[in-house]
Image (cartoon, rainbow, N blue to C red; front, side, top):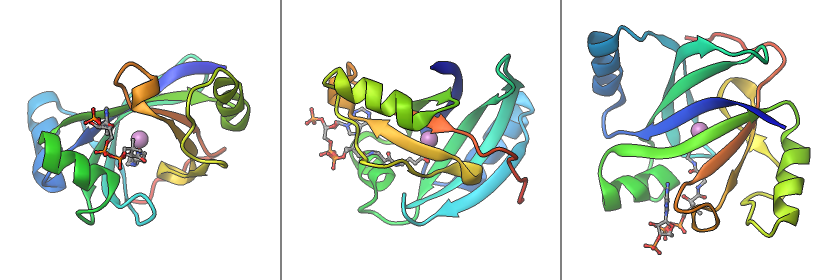
Length: 146
Ligand code: CMX
Ligand code: CO
């Protein structure tokens, strides 16, 4: 069951400048940063609020580490902006399978590693009214590795 908005993924050309925009404009601070080579991103997670299921909602700021990555290709075509939305669930395997049964393309056979040790998969935007949609199960105890 999807129980929260886990994050909104925002593609940017310069992560440091974009982090500074969110800090200076709204007062949001960086909760966590990491490089995910498999996804081809350098990212910053800004925690916005806790949620009633014990999780949290974040903004995920994404800078590509290579031009041929999903975010690199998207930025070249569209420029900066909202890249995807992610829903949180306690069981990404089960929810992905349920959604696959509805005829929606799930991009990975098995969930892969996302931010902070989470497990993630994606639904194809063409099957979701134009929205690239991620499903996330957070790690049991997220670590803060600035
Ligand atoms: N939102 C909405 N539509 C999108 C999209 C997005 N983020 N990315 C691509 N599309 C659309 C394109 O506009 C294009 O539509 P048209 O054919 O009408 O022009 C179509 O999907 C195909 O796009 P493409 O540019 O040819 O790109 P690919 O098919 O090679 O890749 C996708 C698209 C979704 C399969 C790829 O981006 C992907 O695998 N995404 C999942 C992984 C990811 O996004 N990782 C980065 C984030 C990591 C994280 O959140 O942790
Ligand atoms: Co994401």
